[in-house]
Each structure stands twice: as C-alpha cells, then as structure tokens.
Length: 186
Image: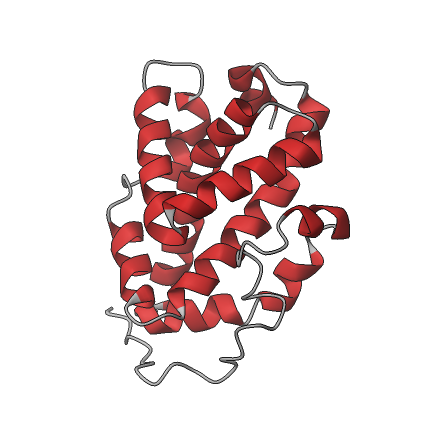
C-alpha cells in the first residue's frame, strides 16, 4: 500500500482506505459479469492473458518505466471484466469515498486489477478449476465480499449494477450448468 501511495502521490492512509474498498468492489463487478452468458469464459481468458508472475513483479514495477504498461494492461483487463462504463462509475465512487481525485482513483483501479487477476489465476490453477468452477468459487465468496464494503461506499455505487452480484440481485446460487471442475494433471 505504501508503494502504491507513493506511486500515486497519495497519503498512505487514504490509499489504504481506497484499496480496502476497491478490491471487493472489483470482485463484485467481476462476479456480476462472470455469471452472464460467456462471462466465465471471458474471465478465464482475461486471467490467461496476464503476465506470468505478475504478483511477484507488481510492487517492484511501481514507480518504474514498467508502471505505464501495467496501468494500461490493468485498465484494459478491468474494462473487459466489468465494462468500461462501470470503470467510470467505480472511479467516481472511489473518489467521493476517499476525497481523492478522479485521476488517482482511475490509476488505483488500473494498478489493483493485475494483482486481483494474479490471485484469481493462482487460485484457479491451485484448485484445478475451469472457467465455470472459478466463477462458482467467486460466487461462494459473495457474502464475504459484501461484508468488506462499508455502507457509505455502497451508497456511492447505488444504481451502477456493480454490487448486484453480492447484494442478491443475481440469484444464481446454483452452480452454473456448464460447471466442471478440471482434473489436476500430475
């Protein structure tokens, strides 16, 4: 968080506050889109396009010449996962919630996304999940994701559909019809 704060020129307490709501908000948006037709496959495709080892290189890329490429990659991936229009809604809510600038909010979203995708990719691989299995794993975390979002932040996202997946508006609690857990190769 301190490296992100430094890279964005933000106070570390504001950055910490922003990161604590950004991650569950992005995950909620990802779940919402992943349960739509073709969404689980799209999620898997976006994860597979991430640079291998992104989690290891994320912090060391901040403040270097590689940061710009990471920002572009993160913004593109986030747009594919939640929709470009939702990025603006999320950045606006984040800016209002933290009192930071809209530019800093957009940059933070772009920086956080590769890390989220790196973790999801690692979990997908370690659990041997296909696209539908990954989506079902995420749906199993809806309550935890919703609990991580403060009520006042949720209010800033009202009407955006970003939180529908964790607020019960998507009722697909059953596994997706195409769900098959991939067999791990040994």
